[in-house]
Structure formats: C-alpha cells, structure tokens
Amino acid sequence: MAPRTCTFHYTLKDSRGQLIDTSRGGAPMPFTEGTGQIIEGLEEPLLQMAVGEKRAVVVTPERAYGQPDPTLVQRIPRAQLPVGELKVGDQFQTGPDRHAPVVTVRALEGTEVLLDANHPLAGEELHFEVELITARPATPEELPAATNLT
Image 1 (tube, rainbow, N blue to C red):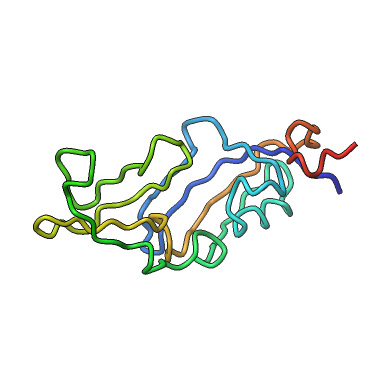
Image 2: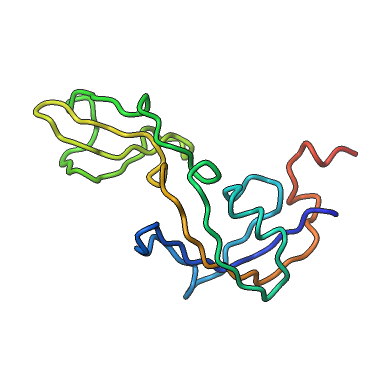
C-alpha cells in the first residue's frame, strides 16, 4: 500500500498525567507515513487507523526519544556561553543552524554550567490521545528522494 499523507490531533501527557502538548484548538499535525516525521511508537498505530478514529496510545521511551545518554551531559565554563542570565531548566540551541542540538541547563555550579543535550522527553513514557483527521495518498513531492526514483 502506498504511503499516506495524514493529519491528526493529539494530546500528549507524561506518565504522571501532566499535559505536555496538544494540537487541540489549533491545526492538526501533518505527517507522511514512513518519512520519520513523527516518533515510531506513534506512527505505527496511526498507520492502522481510519479517518475519524480516536485511540489512546502509550509509547515507551525506546519507541520515542530513547533513554537518557549520560555522555550527552557535560559541564562547561559559564563564560563559554553566549547567553547572559541562566537558570535551571533554560533551553537554548547550541548553534545558528536550525538542526543544532538544543541543550537544557540542569545545574549552575559556581563558574560551571551542567548542560544536557538529551531530548527533554528522553526516558519518558508518553501517553497520547490521537484522532486521525485526514488521510490521502502521498504525492511524489511528499516522499523522500530515495523513493522518488524514476
């Protein structure tokens, strides 16, 4: 079956029931199946859904953002950071490229800062409520270049 381009609404909560994010009240989230645009643990159930169907989906860390990697946590001198005021929990991108890693300030320790480059949801079990809004065959332009061989 050819990949579909779909839109869906979602509400995301952590394992404690705390709201993390939702598309409700805004536009539904678009994605094209098989392109890696959304996490594997969410895409797989959406592949099996029909338009209008609603489903609760629990995604383990291994099928979402993985477990935290301790090698992605580093202490650096505060003077190396191009930002002024810092507080625990602040997040910023490490370079001008939009694909540069985002880091989270985990601790301020004298002249050093503990930065964590793990995804903020690494290690979290994610609880989604999803509703498939639209689904149609993907156009060649929506598929990765590797699948557009003519």
